[in-house]
Image (cartoon, helix red, strand yellow):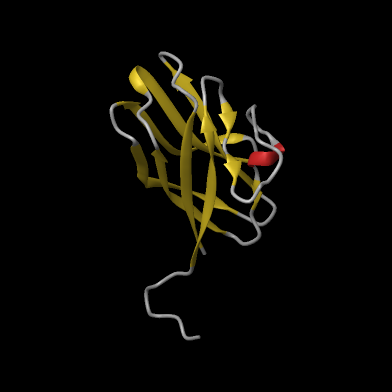
Length: 134
């Protein structure tokens, strides 16, 4: 296959699960039995196999977090928060960070941290995606 000029290969990292009142990591898709309930849980980590840049964080919830409640989604690399983050507060059911990016190398471990502020949202299905550009 011949790549198109100016087009870089990408992959999508996907996470999903219920987001409740406690800070935790999102579960990676296809996880099966282990559901993360704490930050830095093995069930939320994806190991990077190729060097590249992470970018375009997108989050979608079925329901809003609720009035006065915010949910912050942050990409963590090797247990450290990156600049890739977005906040969902009050009304919307989607949030994005299409500006920030972070470099990764083989062996890095990526997860999505979830932190809740201002109240306790109902446990709700959330889907998170993140691009890795090579």
